[in-house]
Length: 258
Length: 281
Image 1: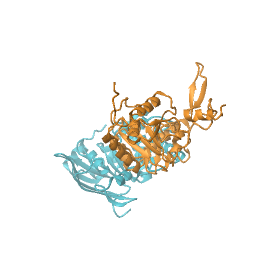
Image 2: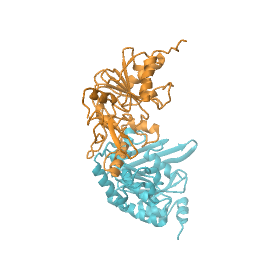
Image 3: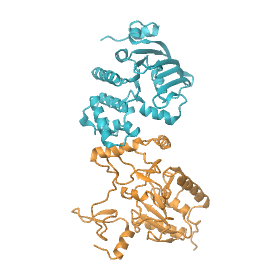
Image 4: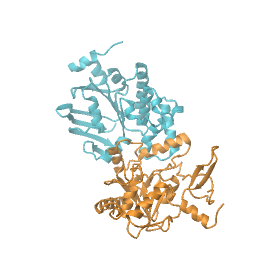
């Protein structure tokens, strides 16, 4: 393990007018680690994730990221060209709705290849081969490489989005409810796939979910959020089996058991 | 009755100065789109008002003007724009490429090689090469500013995936001076190589979209492609039915109801003079 965390978030706040969507959140993410952000809807999970990625500028606080290219950078002050370069090479963002992360009017192959071309790949055969390999890896029939994503099922679209994000081998992947909106059996397969890819590629992941089962399956650590604050943090099993904060207890006890 | 008198070259002097400032900026930043206050012209937008405004701003009393429309000097658009400047600027007009000092063109570069000192003015319907890929203009400006042109290759990638080659036959995107990706206006890809290190000045005016851009003389203009699928300018595999030329860009003309085709040079000036030199088929 390296000495310093990959990502250090300190006192991060995002305010929308009077509303503090994220209120003084601090945590570390180590290389190769999966951290889950759980909490009810409106608790600030997605806003936190989006402000780390730079979609929403934080109001206060700092985010330190240890980059391969630039060394340690302060993301809240990083200039736009470098932030965008990081976003398309070292990071990946998996949207809850795959339609937000895909180009629906372009083929599956182009969707996977776009990140490669954005990173400077200019050899068609290589791009094609990598797209095929990745479709296979996310269990999409490579014969559908030239089909439009809108002809894909929801689960396939989500897997395509994951392939598109992972093709450039990012270090840090931010996932916003990747299994939301999928039926249970499709969810299970997707989770299986995610768990395998995360382990194979040694990804560091921040995973937003309201599903504690997903968190237990994928994450080593959990941050429980309520009203923009982290109310409890710890190892997944510890938080889920022995919640300390009343809100965490409520969350754990309210899981439906089929 | 007295004819209505217009200012020289129709536009008022302030407007011409504004366009010239935009042109100078465009020449200083090759391939970069410079906004300008596009004026109403006495014909509909989309009929070449951008090109006409650029022409009006740069034309002088000693200029010799040639206007071509899809390579032809004798089609409606070419004839009316040529007559328009003949009337409002009183300049000499010509159909001969080498005689002209100023050539306004719709979608062709003449076959006759351009020489230093000549100015090409292009009519541009859509100046933004990224427009089908990125709907937001704020975002395309950012992509240009940061030179993030990965998405431009997405379109080319798909062409090869579907058809085995890049099928883009016109408005083929180019990289200018190693920096800006530019739409060369809907000239055939066949004409793209003529822009590369051309001794002439190339000015592009988009009237409806209110943008001006330029390629100064002797500037690198490289058509985008993949390493394993290089750029290939396409033309019909035929000879001109009138002059027999095999190395010029040809128009395909259906001549009967059974689909019989005939190919003739798109550049009428070139074709006529080849025939005058006695080189018919």
